Length: 386
Ligand code: GLA
Image (cartoon, rainbow, N blue to C red; front, top):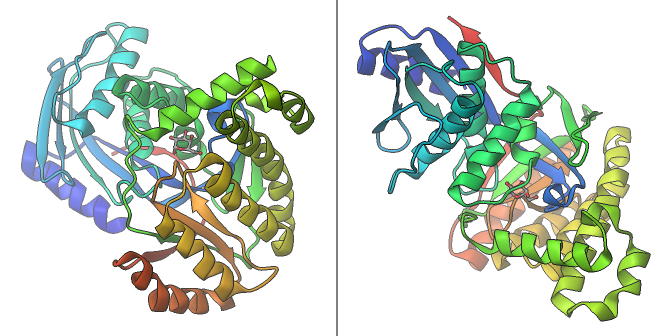
């Protein structure tokens, strides 16, 4: 954190020949349980992690956002603030900013002015840890504070979600909501229908391990939107607005009215919502045996019913499960899927044996190494006038 902050500030001074006036930060996230439930109006249990996106900024007296992205090979972009802003053909990173800007500009006519910005982050991209949500929230919260827009953090999250839609990813609200509203030492259960947030304290004797398969996922324009369509189809057949409002007996009663794939997609979502509610209690109570059962069931459901795991993440989950042993296998693929990371909740004394098992076995399956890191649950977005 300190490192990227220092590098980013120095780069700002060099690029714009002056000191920045504002600092903004928003974290990535790891989801403990509750996958693909958010856009079904259901429950998720993520926490913000200690990796995120940093921005330093200063008003520039123009009507333009001028921005340098250090992690994109120092790529630079500028665009005029307007209620309609075209997407850039090649600079995908800038489109997240363009998406946030045009929405806030449309809602708060005439209030946004030009800013010079330098961005740096340390959330690994394509790992299912929400690097893009941290970018959107960091930027939305920057504009919100600099121009006194008085938007709530949840509204900033919603603007970030719409920026994803502008780019072509019909995601849910989880990633942006937790990046904005993360709470130190807590996971946050989000009711994605009412947007109620419930803090779930992380027991001090448990460690959150994130294991990156280093198989990059690509969600924009991919299978993600396809999964969402299947869920919407199932909800329609069941006569509910969201799958969150359906139950297993309702689904079983309607089995003949849908194809097998649609049935399994819906079964994942309905059972996953139940698991989130139970897992929140188990996590808070430090009931590792129950949490383990639920997290591993979640993985099986993603693998067999929702079909969003890949052989490398399946292998990682099995390696970690065996290393931890019965009653302690709190491990599952996390995030949008199709690669990315596995999350495990473990006792501190088991961390080393998990690392040893992965280092000894994963490469034989995947041909590459995994990256393992520990995180605590962190606070969400912050802003400071310097
Ligand atoms: C991605 C999306 C989220 C959520 C997860 C899956 O991270 O951005 O909204 O749907 O996938 O749980």
